[in-house]
Image (cartoon, rainbow, N blue to C red; front, side, top):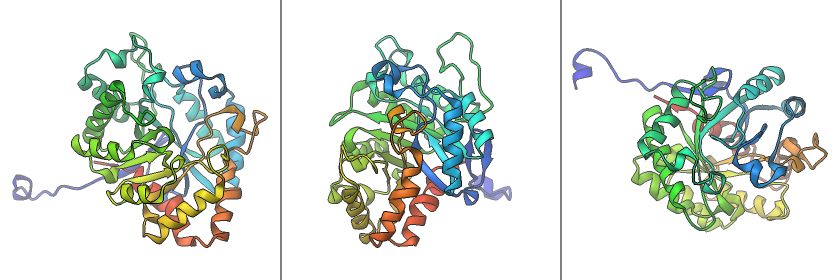
Length: 330
């Protein structure tokens, strides 16, 4: 009432924060909602050496190839202390022409030892440190030194993660901190679910902590391709991240195609995004591995078309939904 009385109106500002600056959501093209470009150091690499991605030249080559297929933006989902190298992401974006979003937040508890600061600081301080990466710039050293050195690049999305069929105490703490930071900054949330479990539980938690589920993307849920389960999650407003194409070790692509068709038929094409999740060197052609980042656009999307999924729905998954989900709203 006070604002109106003075002749002013509240206005929502929406923008997407890339490592090279802000863009308008309507400028966005085809987007890989969840992927990995550089991983050097941190908890994941300690657990599995295949998770180390250390060649900037390989990434630039891969991104130029992906851009030639029509790709525009990729979201690098390496959070705090999981090999994130934000200055390299800036170089890759500038050299390749691919827009990149850097994330803040945390991975699963197994990647942080008991002495890590995330397990010592109160939830309010963890939330503050996450929020400042959105507002002030990503901390180049992952807050691991006595001196805070911020990049000019700001985080554009907040990550938290949950374990297989459970949420551990550190993960619960980080979910609360991530929600607090999202409410403070207007930044969206994109999660890691282990094998697609705990999705409904995460939805209840974000609602408990005051976040609108429409601001949340649940990652990797196609690892659990239960159509009725997916419809229950989407009905509460969340967006579902499907990033399992090419991984026959989980399910053949035909299972994911049928899942997507079922979701589209139920009216939930507006609740799906697609990603590559190429977090392992063995997944990259450049490292001598498998398909790499081109698989979605080169192989999976044509198969979606062949199966009868409409161009309108494919456009939603690749362009419209990411433009909505990765917009910071202030």
